[in-house]
Length: 74
Image (cartoon, rainbow, N blue to C red; front, side, top):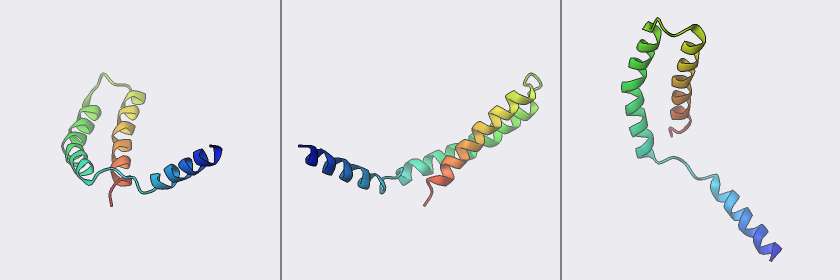
């Protein structure tokens, strides 16, 4: 039984290497990013009610979104 569990775990982990985000999802997310990110950046830069740390945090949000997109492009 332990041997079967070990083999099943090995198969599962080795198959995970080939798993990627569907191309259609990445394309749709990229299109969303292309529309929203520039507008959101402009809003953050212009908002006088946000202090520097708040602005930096919001800019990191946009940058990490971009990084995820780039990491999933083929």
